[in-house]
Length: 132
Image (cartoon, rainbow, N blue to C red):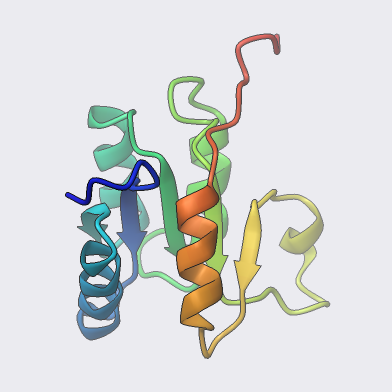
């Protein structure tokens, strides 16, 4: 762990193990604590057992449960709903889910790694305590 106060607890959710490991390695090299998941259900299970996660990097296209469904499920659980989620990929304009699901940021592929690292370093958990 880096001494820099900007380190984060990051969950990388990507079905391709090579891409997932490359992102995890990059983030660890920056001093972040990184967990990995290959599917939406794995990611939800991780967050529910580790609600102190600071930020999720989530591929939209996943097996079993896509990124859209993951985000909807996450938003229904008050313990983990405030964890920021950056989508890895962009929705197609004609995709009806694009207007119904909130992501804190989209990172189109190919990823611009410096922008992604800057986002992780600055990500802040949403305070949802005052919401009904």
